[in-house]
Image (cartoon, rainbow, N blue to C red):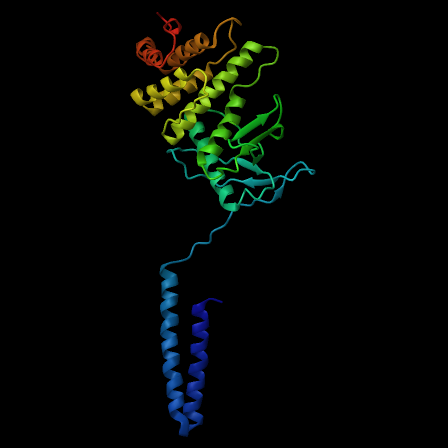
Length: 312
C-alpha cells in the first residue's frame, strides 16, 4: 500500500469517527468537527496524489538476469544476458551478446552493466559495417597483470579462451572493448593449420584491425608504442581523417572480405597487406587506382617503405 492509500484510509476513518461523535455526543460536537476537517484535508491530499500518479505513471525497471549456471557443471562461471544497447555509434541492428563472468568481487553489478553495454555497442558497430561475428564471448575474468589480456586455444570453443580485465583499471571502457576486439578478430583472422605464413600474416592483421576499429569506435587515436607496422595503424587513421570514418571502416572491411592465404610463402607481410588493400579498394569502386596514389602516399609519410607501394 502506497502513501496516498494510507492517507485516504485515515481520512475515511476520521470522517466516520467525526460524523459519529457529532451525532451521538452533542456535548463534544467540536471534536467531531475537528475530525471532519482533518478528514477533508486528508481526502484532498489523497486526491492530489492520485491525480499526480495518473499524470506521471512510474516505470518499473528490471535488471538483467545474471545467475544462470554455465553449461559446465564444474565451472564457477555465471552467465549474463546483455540487454539491447544504447550505442556510441548510430547503428540499426538490435542484437545481444551473451557474456560470461567468472565469480569475482571485481565484477559488481554496475561494472557488469557497463561491460555489457560497451561490448554490445562495439558488436553493433562492427555488424553495422558488415562483419559477421558471433554473439558469444569468452569468459571474462581478472587479468594477472596491469593490462587487459586475451588467451585462447585454436581451434577451440569460447570456453578455450578467456578475457582478462585488470584490477588496476576495471572502469575504463576502452579496456573491455579492446580485449573483446582481440577475440573478435581472432575469429576473423584465425590460425591456419599447416600454414605458418598464413597464420603469421593473420596474427599481424589482427593487431592492425583491432587497433584501428577500437580507435574508430571511440573516435580517438590511442597510440601503442609496441605496435609493429605502425605505419599501417597511423596511416589508416590518417586515411580516416582525410576520407571519413565510413570510407576507412569499409576499406578495412572489404580488405578482410577478400582475404586469402598468401600465394608466395616468402612474401613479406607489408607487400601482401598492400595488395589486399588494393583488393578492398576494388570492391569499393570501379576506379580504385584514383585512391591508390593518395592513400599509399599517406602510408609512406608514416614510414611505409616506398618499394612496397603498389603500381610504382
